[in-house]
Length: 458
Image 1 (spheres, rainbow, N blue to C red):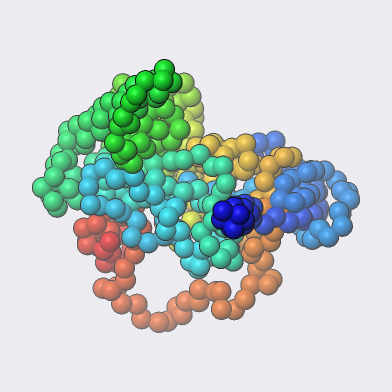
Image 2: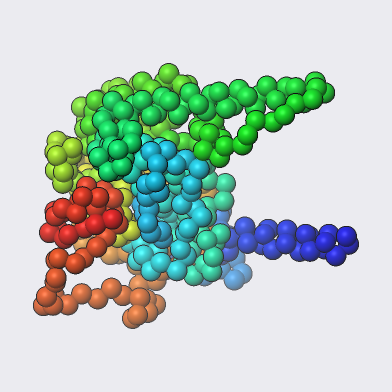
């Protein structure tokens, strides 16, 4: 028994150590600091100690052991946050049933994915890694930090980040299950039915457990209900412990899901893609206590009929109507270009610098429930920073250094040759065999030709 006790203690210590992500200390000196939430500070230092921002000002003292980065003439912004990515995972759809809430992508994170390093090279420090869109109610997602070099998935997880789950509306679930497997849903109406049916099952499941626990408290003999992992997750959604993130395009279906969620008392949702969000921006802003959030593409649409109608002004219209809006990649590759995507929304919608930068920093942080820790440069927040040689909304800007928890994970001056993705502009490209899993193209599921002319199959 004593040996077992010691073994248990040893395992607990190992688990505790694994949960403690590495941190560092760094002084970024004399940069133009784009705080996002408190304006732009010229010739300013940012001090990070043991992974946290401890001071912002001029002529800050350097703690012993802290790395010094001379940022004169450079721009320092919060680490970029991708609210919808499929980085560091593969086979993103558990498409075996219309509802698979019991699975989680956090079980299959790959810390060795080179895409993590390339994302760091684009200033991205945090990603929301999502299940695919084959299911009406898909699997749970995982919020990670890009700690390149982590030896196991635990090293990527953002400890304490709220749980989230993937829903999907429209053609993806109806095609995969209705046309593909002759299962509900076969229509857009069927999608709503699956949602309501599953929520009602979760209510009955939770009621059964509440009755059992009441009987136990009153010292009565009781038999516990059969455990159901799927309904356990659904009950957690109903109680507000899990944030809904829903793949969506059409305004009518977005309105439908808001009605469903209101009927079941769920008041927190981020709609993903939201291509027709500009049509219903006031309705999104009025949902629940704080409004429904929108995480969108800057200028992707018309890649399938369901997404025929959208506009590059979407982000600006949503923002002006008070909708908490972010821009995402839905990709393991595009996320290293999110500062370019934010720049597009500024160009087309006339957003201010802070509004445009918020689309890839504080806004996605708030959508993921981590806005108190990342997304802006403030004392007390995590030391996640991206340093550019020009203003990050400029097409000419190039990321120079990316810092996560006070550790420099990307430095363009120390970038190893074998980490580079080198492209020969004169090489022939065979467009018939390139495969990708980015699920923002409908062609991923249908084997059609996407906007780049690549044949994509998932």
